[in-house]
Length: 493
Image 1 (tube, rainbow, N blue to C red):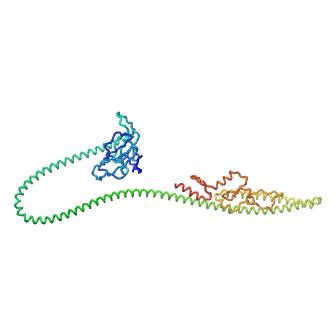
Image 2: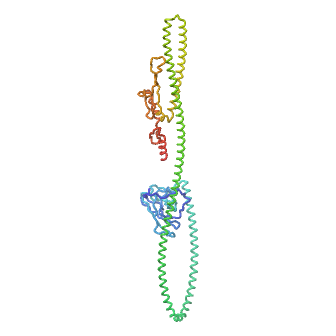
Image 3: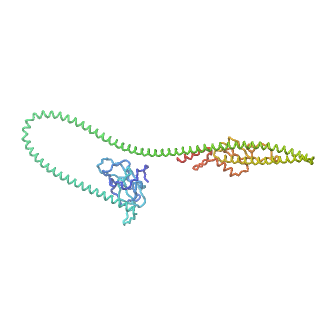
């Protein structure tokens, strides 16, 4: 609202801590015409020392702190810096920056520390009305005005007491002047007496004229010396004045340096607090990182254990397949013998010995058939356990880093070979033989059947990705540390 670029110095100091009698505003109108410039007149008492950052502001009546100013102007430094003199000053407010409403406002003089040193009587920006206007104020404003009136009455009482003391001093000075006049009359009488004595001494002076001439010569030399001493004294006085001016400038510079030092100390305290907060965040991040490292180590150990279990199960499956293949060969061999025996029995049906042998062979065949069924059931259970272990491995977060190191087998339905017990010489097919009919995960070597639902496949791929909740940036799931550093950067902002 002000044409000045810099903001004035303000503070949150309440009204009780302000001194309203150090600057007195004079010629304050009750009404100021809207649309015109306003000149503010004020007097600086000897109790205040004007400084460069002092300012005069317009405040709405009822203000609490100096931050509630409507507009302001910088106060001009007076030409004379005599601390005992009463200085008349003025500032002009342009019409463009003045309030446009008819509320009550007042001038306030604020020093560069943000403390109010003087306040004017309230006024309005409107045309002066002939009729009286009823002003409605709130209870808070009434209490503030009463408080201001009490402060003004207190200051008025102090001024009256000061006036009484000055009157007393004036009476004492008049009494001293009367005594001095009486003493002067006595001195005039003494002067008349001395004049008579002077005539008497004239003759004696004539006699001493010769002696006086000699004394005058000595006096001339003394006067010359005195003149030289006077010149030296003037030079010393001028040097002293220049030293006084330099001392005042140095004192002003010292005050400004002290102010700057105070601001720097405040900034240093703020930076120390920020540094302490960053250290605490760094310690918490280090502890979290250590916990994640311990969890990763435990997960890797668990993965190693599961892999060792999978390897042992695979070895057991291979042994069972080999045993199953041997049993199948034995069964086929027995089947051939059974067929031959059946042919022989047809030819020699009457032979009792051959009948017994056939019964024994049938009994042996049944035993081998039961053993084969038991081995198939055991093989099926081992395959089920193996698939459960593989499913548990795929559910682990770090399984993708180990999936590439070990081959993954995909179960393929057995081919129809026409044999009752299957082909025991058929080797298990790996995923490489059926790669054309499988979907691959782009983040690891996991494969899926072609008829898998698209939502399941997308959920699996999405589980390997990490999305930033602040900027929606996508990260690889294996780069979790990079993702956490990215989130930490957002927290610092």
